[in-house]
Image (tube, rainbow, N blue to C red):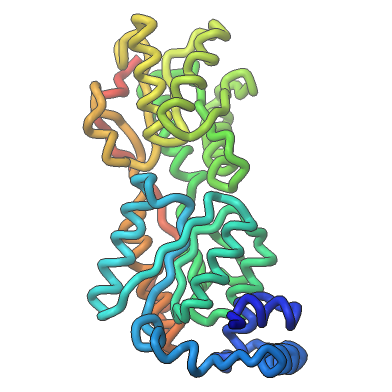
Length: 333
């Protein structure tokens, strides 16, 4: 028995396009409509029968695309979207993209196939151009942690440059001049922007930037430990370290402790995100807070409004700024 993917293959279009034709959504070309209808007829595919059992359950669903929900950051994001969904008497469907363009593309197609009228999408693999096309095709699609000027009204984002700038400026204000940076090895805009904020803070405060101050690794505890070990191996006179996120900071602190380097007496450490782990470290981690829950709630409401053709709240800001959370891992030099 033919399914929606068979129709998409026969019509030489995406699953999302087939879904748009079936649901008579706007921004669908006449050529695509003709190709899909001919393919359904040829294959004997009846979308009405296929959707009877699922329509009542999924027509008011919110699709959520995240990299990996096992990561506590994305877990908080999903829970925030789910909170809004339940308040609006809706359910959520979750799909994973793992920062991979192919997986993200398939995930969006799958959520559309399941008749999600609203989508909250955290995508780092897909290009701006492809996400713009998806936004044109899916009225209720909203991007989170991504800013694309052409669809800025569909983006809920964080100023990652400013957040990293704040973190490093705090170290400088505490008298630190020799500061290392543990960067993420992932080729996504978050990584680029946070490294740029580190460099900007140094140069604007009259300190020299050098690539030797930066070590990249996976953005987790093991990556933080690896990067810290490699930074120590350079034998630089580092008195403070800024990190891509709190998990890398945790790994860095473990390596410093193993090398009898005291935190913060010998080396201060500052994180990024204010993840749950920050308050359980010893010492408790100074960091900058990523307001992911508030951002995800706004993204969910915006997706619902756009998906149901309501007028969004234009007074709400779509670009958030991290805030410094001083704790015990940074002291004056």
